[in-house]
Image (cartoon, rainbow, N blue to C red; front, side, top):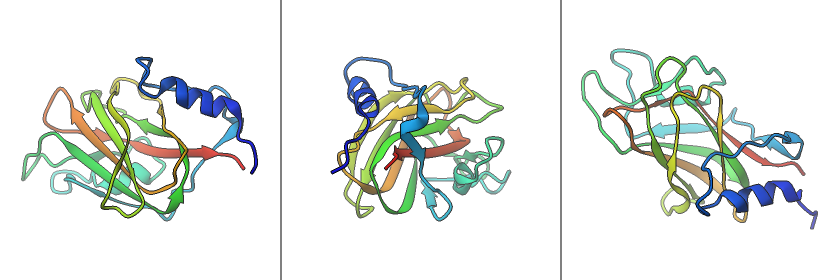
Length: 176
């Protein structure tokens, strides 16, 4: 078995529920790589498609100026809001990057991440994690790479208003 770089696992262990900061910054990204999102699909608890084009697929389009928005026009929605990504193959994730909507910082303030092999039974990866909507660069959240998951679910738990929105979600894995 090939040894994995120590700094990835150290960062994940350091920030996994030890009362430390929620956001991880990988200053040396030479040991990780972005997972290919080109074939991924996504579903959402709700999405706004009546008053604006803000469907869930926009968090996977590599454009930070587009965004998913929970429904608000015809049918109002409230927390929790969720996004469920089918990554099409099991991935051993190291971190998940979440980018806030660029022109509105009033989205979620807490969220959870879950992984699944079948899309039905879920394993908690991170719970009640802080998110800063005013931060316009990607915020990285370390997750344990002990297991591979095909599905990633982000559930927005709280925020300053009833709606939620996000610009992008990316997953990083260890380089082989």
